[in-house]
Image (cartoon, rainbow, N blue to C red):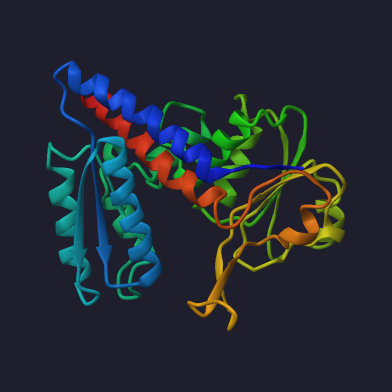
Length: 291
């Protein structure tokens, strides 16, 4: 059984990106600049955004954090987005999700300039992705593709079962895995909360991508021997034995499934670190276009 180590792979990727940034700067081009808008003080979002800021520093990027009150109006938030759209010094930016309930998430995503949408969520970029045209790929699916490629996991002709249909992971993942690409050419089944006989389907899978947000949902009796398992979920579960009072769990029951898997991602340290690395890669792509 091989652990698909997202932490080590993302560090390697950041080093490669840092070398490219150095070459850009030597040629007289300024360093890539990534900005993030954070609305409110959600603990998980704050941790994630801070990790992005640290990653930028490691890769030689400039970074800007725009922190806004949770009570900010939708109109004022759209004004902040417009400022970044028109700021020539910013190559790419993200609006950290989730947003407060009084703000229309779709309206916010639509307001982002597609050429600066390094999260890959704008409908224009989603459309290009669907047609397999050059564009920003959503960071988490992009990271999963990179992991599969770097660990040389065979995907061509394999049966991939995706559990979950979100626009952030499940849906784009199903499209990307079926396309003609190094980590692709697979036959894909997308499943979700309304899928009947889910266990029968996952037992047929050569590769399972679990992205539904239910901790330890996928168990050993749901997968066959030598399966590759990608665990996208991460949930805090109360645990009195831990100093901070909780432990992190993925969508996969790691202990039991790992015994049957040929390859598996851990939680934490699997898909999560790759998401941040691919966000940097998208920003580097944007900076190269600008250069």
